[in-house]
Amino acid sequence: MRIPDTSRTRALIVGDVMLDRYWFGDVSRISPEAPVPIVKISRMEERPGGAANVARNAAALGAQTTLLSVVGADEAGQALARLMAAEGVTTSLHEDPQLATTVKLRVIGRQQQLLRIDFETPPAHEVLYGKLREFEQRLDHCDVVVLSDYGKGGLAHIAEMIKLARAVNKPVLVDPKGEDFARYAGASMLTPNRAELREVVGQWSSETELEEKAQNLRNSLGLQSLLVTRSEEGMSLFTAEGALHEPALAREVFDVSGAGDTVIAALAVMLGSRMDLAASMRIANRAAGIVVGKFGTATCTLAELAGE
Image (tube, rainbow, N blue to C red; front, side, top):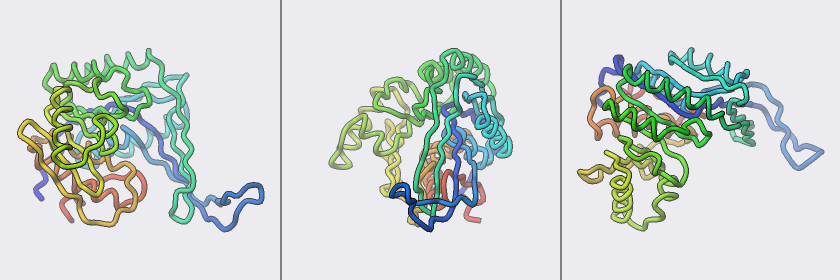
C-alpha cells in the first residue's frame, strides 16, 4: 500500500477532549457488602480520549498536528496537556475554572471492563466563543480541519467553524453526534458510524435503500462526501459519483473503542497529503483494522500501515 509523505501535512483538530483512565486489577472474590466483584488495583494508565485521541492518531501518522479545545483548570486537564505534548501534538487547551475536564474511568479485571465512571460538565459559552476566534486565526496555518463532536458542548459554534473553514477552502471533516446533522451542513465530509446514521435517516433493508438514504442526506446537507463506518461490514463512501464500498479487514477484534477517531484522523492526514478520496478511505480502513486489535484507545503508525 502506497503511503504519501505526511511530514508536511498540517492538521487542525477541534472538539471535545477527555481523559481516559484505566485501573487494572485482579478479581478473586465477591464483596460481602453487595453482589459485586472486588478488584484489587495493581496498575493505572492514562490515555487521551475524544478529539485528543484524534489528534494523537494524526500525529502518529506523521502530520504536524494542532489540537484546539476546552478543559477544566484541574489535574485531569494538566494530565491531558502532558500526554499530548508527549505525542508531539501542539495544544491550545482553553481553561474554564467552572468546568471539570471530562474523565472516563474504566475498571478492568481479567482483561474485561467491569465498570466505567464518567465525570463531565459542559463548558461555559464565553470560553467557547474565545475558541472560535482562535480557530479562525489558525485556519491559515493548516491543510485540513477535523471537528470531533462527542456531544460534550465543546463545539457549540460548529456551524460557524464550518463556514469559516470553507470560506478559505480548507477541507472540513466532521465526526458527528446526535440526531440533528443540520448543524454540520456545508462540511466536506461526515463520518458517522452505522448506528449514528440510523438515528438520522432511519432503518434500511438493502444496500440500495442505504445508498438512497445516504445520498439524500449528503445532498440535503451540501456535503461533498459521506463516509459510513459499518463495523464488520466495512466502510461505505457516498459521493456525487456514486457509492464505493471497502470490506472490513479480516483480523481479530480486541477493542473497538476509539476506532472512529483513527478513521477520521487517517482520512484527514491522507487527504491533507493530497491523496485521492478512494485511496484515503482504503488507508483509513486499514488503520481501523489495526487499532481494533489493540486494547483501549490506540494509534496506528505509518510503519504499521506499511506492514513493516
